[in-house]
Image (tube, rainbow, N blue to C red):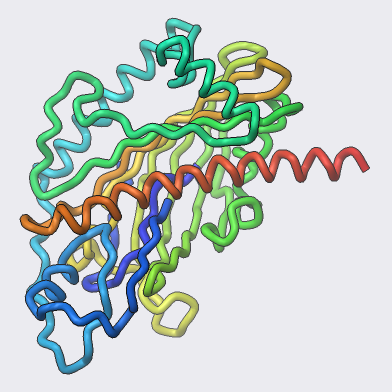
Length: 323
């Protein structure tokens, strides 16, 4: 649905104002303002996009401005997204084995299906060479995850009703989504607004717009393709001075996000799969050992939350309808 958001410390803010803008957060067990780190490390952490940053006292020198977003970064992301699109289209045309777990060796596949039947979410990080393209992304990081959840007793239309009900996403996906609305709809083509709010040490609020197309492939199969056409970090949300930060002064916490959904009705329920590719600013050299594990955990946990929230929303609607 809405893909990847980050619980990060604000430095320069976050905004993206073009096409290609998910959905998870990791745990951090440190003190917010009392960490005794060398000053150089603190400043370096402040400059890291899509990562956790500790608060700095007002007496500390401000960090240098982050480099501006480069067209080469966007081109690399666009090329990666195109390759993922091509792979998805080929798999959909094949019409069988549509869940990522279907490609697992037999024993692993059986275990994955058993885990899904027991209520677990199955998640995988896609390889950086997915789609057969070179993954060099200058000054950026591409994050690619796929997950699936099983909704026992559900029908395909039950899931589509939740996914397409953008006016109520703020209820279905709370607390991550605090505002939502359907801007317009033309058949199976939707344009929606979602405001996300995520907290980790500090709070980040994002205004996002999404262009989504749904496809009914058969009575038991459906898929959708979503592009975030606008992402902007909101400064002073809910206050008189609220504004969207311009991209030139953002922190690069989220520069792009693309989402692919697949729904398959079988085994007495519906399997819901979501695949997300997102773009953030790169991690400064020398800090990968510390920051990379956190950055990787963020999209994973957000994707898991989105899938579980979708299941909860479908189950809640079914209970209300049965009364």
